[in-house]
Length: 497
View 1 (cartoon, rainbow, N blue to C red):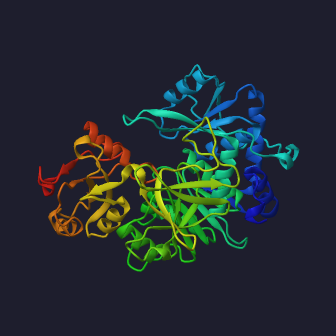
View 2 (view 1 turned 180 degrees about the vertical axis):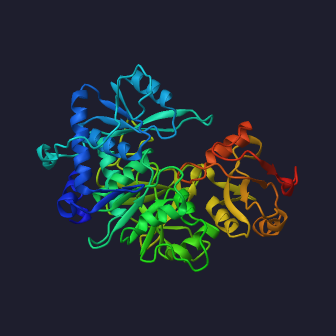
């Protein structure tokens, strides 16, 4: 089966089960699940859901990731929309779904949960299976997915719906990004409680790969041992998991000796971490672009990044075409089109041939796509426009700097002026990095540099610039990170605690 045969992820999963029935497709802790065992679990889940056909939306709120994956897939195959709360408050999600006229059922594994919402508590996946009686031949996706997204700058949440065509198209592209020859094994290391993790897990299974559910508190060594228990050729994960895998590496220790490529989704990989990956994991590092809003549309090729003044994302995936158009501010804005029918959730009322992910970009003559930054992050410095990623690439290689985020100021009195947030290694003094910063901004005119502890990040490891902007606007403490930021010039950063 080739990737071009993947028209529906569930039918593709069944075809892989026919070919690789006893092979491992999911690892959770010490448990290894074969394709056939997964179909057993899915048939049981479908039978349990049969008596809940009057409900059109399931809130999949399992603590256990394997249950979330199995019942999420079973709901989509039965035509029940799903909502994966992730870090979003469950009560808030229910309050948003019910007023929209959704008939909601709560799926969970908490025996002590008290709720007035109709619910199904699942304690055990492995009841008697009716797999042989289940019509897997006609099995396919029949419904879409709700997810939460950021709303206003105050951090409120809005409910977003990915239609069935959008979901299929996103999963198809994720499959393409994770597809290799049939004699190679791809492992997807992911948490499935969030929409992107669930989607990429289903994509990996549909592409004949194996999903590793890391679980909370899994150590670096435990994850390495689980992955190395398979003959792994390719690995995909998110930045936060790369940080775990790269912990406590001793000299000359190669963690995955047979690894041919590593695909990181969600955010770029900078500085010391990038060098660790190339030295101890694999030199063939790739980064997926577009993973949050629209599924992957292009893959960053590591060998294209040797020049510090270029920011290539790589080549567009099959079915995606791109245009670059000038907006009202003169920026070259990226527009994408998917031949397989995906829309963009930024506008739920209309669907256009081309949609914009709000990125500034350019196209190379040979088809390379260059992402230069978000349009709302652009910096105006001494009469010129600067792409934040150019600054971040230069600052990230300064010794002692762990993470960096740059963007144009959102406050009216400094609108567009450079703002740089720096996360320093706890053992490094800011004074040792300031000379390098002055080389980037020679005069340091109208440049704000904030130094502090951990930058706020999503569970996948992506820096939350929105949170940093709120910190500037409203004095709010950045979510998921430290509020211990010092403005250089107002307070000595080396006095931080």
